[in-house]
Length: 354
Image (cartoon, rainbow, N blue to C red; front, side):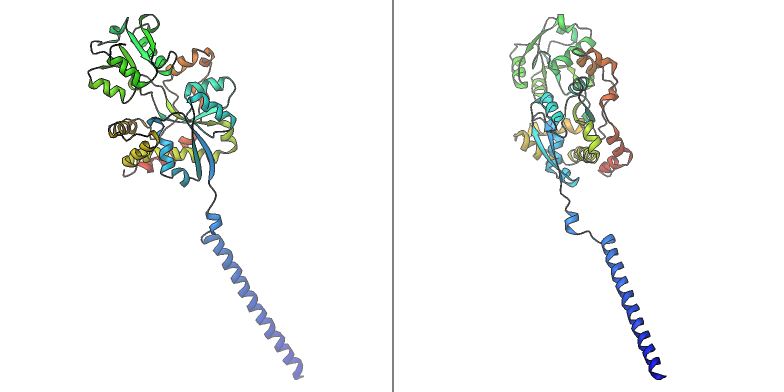
């Protein structure tokens, strides 16, 4: 009688021990799972590789400042991007590289984008960094009004260039027929046009900073300031609709980096000047300071693609493609990225307490 009872006691003790071991095992597994879900991620998961993309730069100019800022301040890196900045010749070459897939994005000029899309391309503008061109028409001191320019000689970089178009457009607004009443001359560089103006070879010149300041110091007058008179968006952020469809996340990270770069530029003057010194390769403090003052003002904090006041752009494109007038500005832009960053409060936070 005793033996069976002892045997049952042993069996019950063994079962209780097994239950305790099972409970301990369950607690260990649950703790391990919780540690994975709630604790720090393993190093291999934290070190997610950066997405490599190519950005096309169209000129060594202060207007191209923001991508340099975003790269040097490691803003791209913070947003998971490894950006290679590739210098190309103008919007035409950048457009070709963008459409071939060699570039992920580039600052293609709005007229070039429109012309390309009218010919079947799928480029799209997702941000505009500057609302207008920075060119000025400087004239001899005795020329007081646009009417005084009749019969005079005006120089731009080349016939058909953007400056040539902008000032012909502006003069028409002032009642001048630029094709009949002005003699236009092509003179290559900013410095060469300034020299021609100062020596009396020409009566007016399309110049940008610092040539405009140098001319004003010598008594020459600003007859037309394109920044004040003409809406002509520049320094855009252009990608393809295919990139947006297939990799919207990367496009957003690129746009977010650009917006952060603008804020960083405005709030970190000395760093910005060092970056411009590196890329433009000048230590001229006056030039650097002047450039900063201009572009701190010009860079748009919330750089929505511009769709209003584009009559000059349409006129420019219509010279070769009159059918542009059948298309709305909204067809060439995607404002959803800036809209999302703006409405979420992201852009506002960049400037809080600054």
